[in-house]
Image (tube, rainbow, N blue to C red; front, side, top):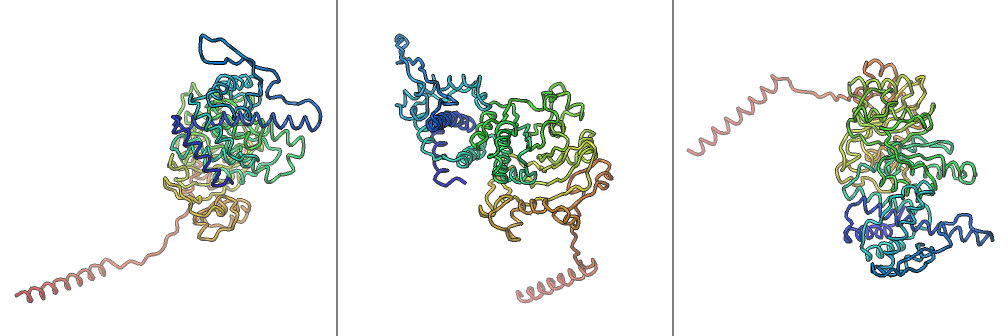
Length: 524
């Protein structure tokens, strides 16, 4: 958890960009990402230097070469005077102390080309730097922002990750690109329900800022602290466990940096149009899918991957994504994904078929109906969390339905806190009272999910209940909407008979007439 002082520092950086003429929130976070990467390179190099000195042996990983680069002394096109400068001048700890104009020149003309060269042979994140450019030419702004970033105490992994998460939240609060950000407490709920293990291979095919993968990584660190002490498990965690796909280069950079700052060194964050490209290379690869994909309506048949069209004949992106999840999952793999309500109830042939596949061919386990305001102020669409396991041979016994009423925040555009921070989210630090449960259903969802056997006794008038396979099949359309199975509680209300109501009205009318008569006599 970052402090108020650090939040204030981040806000000042944000404001500095705005006052310096960089007003697009996505551009701001992109430029901050570049600068954080430059800072991180210096930190890695410094750590390697200290390690080599301690062990009295050459450095294993040399980020900045030992030689020099050619530096043009001034900007006069008539003056071709160059000098040799050491690559150490490109390191953050050196750059921070240069005069602002020299700093701008070094960063723009030498540091960024250096980053682009790294992209040819670097880590997963470095590959996304191949088209990196400094997006402004204000030397004073660069100097100010670098000093502000240098002043934020981000010495440990948790703080680095939280600071970047807070910056990403600024994108949403600025009112743009909110579709890229699933609320963190909803992500944490889904991750805790799926309970990743150190052997999982996790994928988000519409990763955005990699929020789901970051949360999964944090969960694993908390639940399996010994994991990173095992060389094999540590190598799997850093290099093979996390896979993220997106077709927006800026999102890829931001998502990759988010993973790096949360301590995952080499996640596979790759460019891919998940609905348009074939998936033969990694079909059946992943043991866990976590996703909240964008649902943009319809695609052209020609633009849709043929292997997905074979599974379900449709142009609807929401159905294609469900087919994609099944395609990517290995047998026995699990998924927790957000889908619009239309997937659960629409009556088209493709909608019915995708529901039949989930219930009859695989194992559908749970549907958690989300309140319609959970993604406000960006979208008021009704959605649900779908949890299922890929089996290929069926296995659905009972499907657990939960009607989430509140998630701890108001459901209007303000999304204000309804409970204190220590009682927020799916795993609050303090237990909730019954009144607070009505404001934050997430802990109750997690508790009931861990003991589904007890849900068999819940009536369908309750907030959660089980629906057997036979009841879903009997609908004929494999309907999965909660309202199809939830029973309303009818309270008996006693009404007077029409004759009694008429008699009462006549009595009132007689009183009025009598009163008017008395008033008329008084006025005479």
